[in-house]
Length: 91
Image 1 (cartoon, rainbow, N blue to C red):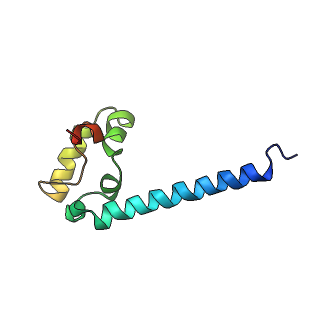
Image 2 (image 1 turned 90 degrees about the horizontal axis):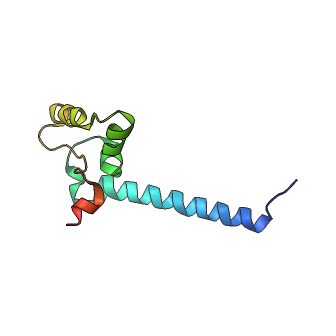
């Protein structure tokens, strides 16, 4: 039983491919080509701005402890996004 016509499946497949390619291209740019790519830090913090949201949401607000751990591991300037996300950086 085919609920959706073939053209809809093709369109969904194309959207999935475009989204996947964009995510990979942005991750490669942020990790290897961006001017701040040489700043040491964890991979996920370098390629996404969701890193603090994981520690503040899933880990019950423990991002401050993660920042202390990153300072111990990587030195004074780990590559973690600033608090406030992209909107705070635009000011």
